[in-house]
Length: 200
Image (cartoon, rainbow, N blue to C red; front, side, top):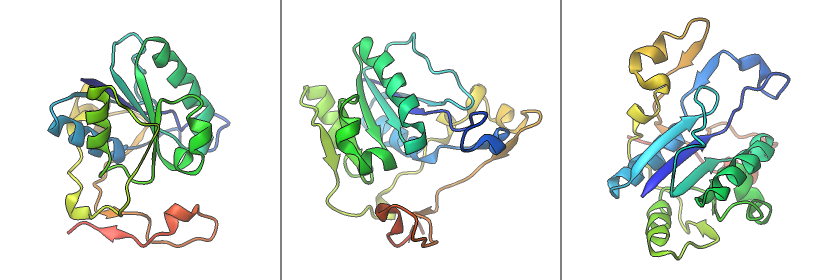
């Protein structure tokens, strides 16, 4: 199965992160999903729309898109274009976790909460033609079970060297060692206030 994972554009002039146009954050969560997918024998492509063109002209079986509230309208448009080509589209992230019913108006399925324990179920159901509307793990992810992200799929422009040689831009090269921010703020959504978990 051919899978495309998309992080939509965050840095839009006049948008929420307009002052960060020259900063790149690696979408580690998509690298983890990519690792889980390749483990099951699937072909995966990861696109960071702040740096990469979304390959609308390529054929994919499954499109996975990470969605925040401020990218939701953009994501709905992206999903529609791929659904017109016959791909199944699944949303994950904070927005579908909070508003799954809204997201299901445009997505074939949504992931509520963390993805690590449900992604293989999604892949199996896709292959069997029994994709469910909602996938939600009934337990918190143990960080020992989380695979290392496929870093080679997260390098924009096709090479490690180019990630570090982008004139006028700041590249933040990170590894995931902790799940959830350890800071507790009352304005965060409920799912973000769980205790942080560290990877040894």
